[in-house]
Image 1: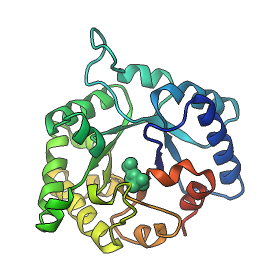
Image 2: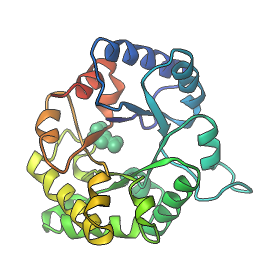
Image 3: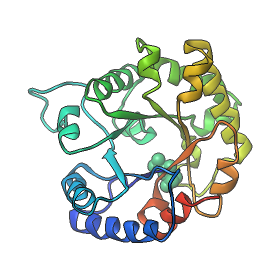
Image 4: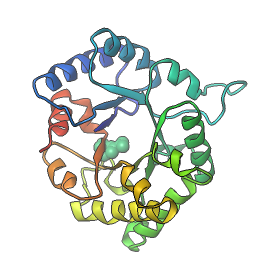
Length: 249
Ligand code: PEP
């Protein structure tokens, strides 16, 4: 279960949320649920200090990275810098970055490779807009995004990627895809992995659903065979709500 904080919370607010989340999670045994937060870059050092200092069972990562290793790229953050801060994950190709920063499939592919080169687990986002959904082209569209993002990767690299299916029309809108909508595309993404790298590889890849996930709707989504977890935006800013999502069953 991964919480995408987006551009919310400064490092002091991050400190409070992590402490509240740790307290909420500690009330229950969550041995088989991996909990991850994805704060803004400026919060990562604070999160690292808390997680290391208190030995918290919370993983963390960033919301983006540069495709480059280092150099004259003002404003960019390299994967090696994130790894040095203890990050295990990095979100790549979120629909907000594709829409507002013109990230295309080629750049997403380069970022996936940059993440893997720095031993970071990419959380690779794919998802269709409302226009594509209305034309019922969501399966072909998302498969196309996934295929392009994984171009040139070996099966050994593909198993290290986490895929997040996030229909754009369901992000931050309060409109959740039905469990059947989520399964349709997540199942098709897994089928693409089977075609690409075989069943054994495909079964090891974790596929998340994202889009207005809340404590009230997580159980139905998690009951789907090809949904292994969730990427949670707004609801991850509330420690108790996110902890409830993590204890979904
Ligand atoms: C997201 O930003 O990845 C997301 C799924 O947001 P929300 O849960 O707020 O729809």
